[in-house]
Length: 535
Image 1 (cartoon, rainbow, N blue to C red):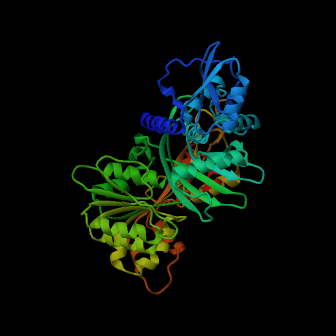
Image 2 (image 1 turned 135 degrees about the vertical axis):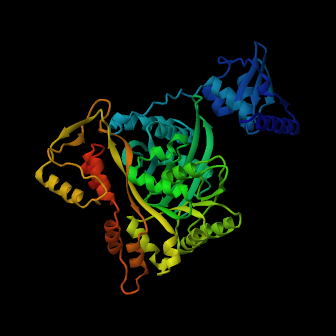
Image 3 (image 1 turned 60 degrees about the horizontal axis):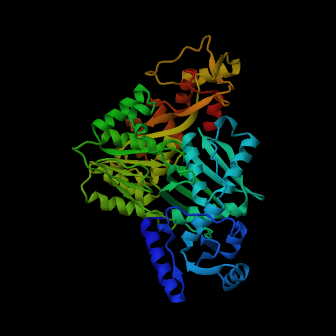
């Protein structure tokens, strides 16, 4: 409680004491509080809602609150007949402070979650016990603190028949952390809903954002900065909390792992910033990190950059950022309306957090046609699929087609820990598959030698039970070439994503599968990871 709030409470309590005809004591001014445990037991202090403030052989002063019952006062008078009894009103906060002194709550030992034991039932039970002992704000702060420490991207609260399962997504894979009973989960859910401005009774899917500092019972301060996604299930409300990482070093082009060919394409866009650039992929594929890294490289004193985001995940210096709040009913127009308003502010570069609807896509293309660089994300399985979904908007319009500068699709796969790996010789079928993919690489890409090839696989160690550490992106970059432009402008046949992808490969595009295979051959990841992520 802040000092101002405590001062207001004490003043209100003093006024109430005068009305009731009692003395008043401001316990916040009593520096050394004396405990008279021989006068009253802890159970009596709790049940009677009264606490001895002063006591000697002849006199006892009891502190009571405005909610202490008349029966409790009468009981105290009948119990202490040999002493002169007086009563003084104290604030509810003052009473709770004394109660904690007489009967201190058990000290919570916040155990650090060990990633090596996240599948261990013992650890799950230990973390569950900790969560069941602490208040809701501490539960939330502890989960966020541990998730950040483990490098987790999401916290999943999943309602089941008997309890609520908590899992962390680490390097793209979910790990069990704890189980909560429903009574405790309702308390946590209420705190999350209050902080994130969502409703616990809503039957619709909801989005929210929590940004606050929490001081836990052990004194640790935790920055809670998460995006909320909720959905109502047959048991209760499921919640996914997406963690925002505020590490500025993440948002550098050098940190993206771009190949020399991919980096040249991005550098050319930065050198001549105009047109539409879309980063394509599912949720959790690193799209926002890629966009932010490009923004960081584009930012200088000569350019005006404006972003439209839902919500703002990271604040940049020298960039104007607009946070929009969309809902299921309004999301079809909010981004487009904001984009049209932003264009009147004469920006050089605009970032639209996500193209979700035709109206926003059309507005983004129109802005790109007029000399602006427009950056955005888009949900699609591949770069060619994104172009197909935009085909209705392009509608064989050569101006729209020429406005598209780059579509970059990406996924994240787990990276092998070089300290937890071993080399092995792949079997004949694996070699055959790799050779088929490598043989289709564009001419300008050096083909690796598959003779005497060895691949890497993770091994289990005490330090790393999974053999993976971190994630890396696999990508494909789609550029509008003359061949692709002629296909998109053709009115003879319906253009499919397969047609577009074939033309892109013929024009020199390295597919996401080819990029992934090159990384596997380079011992950065495994074939199983490719199967898991892209099939």
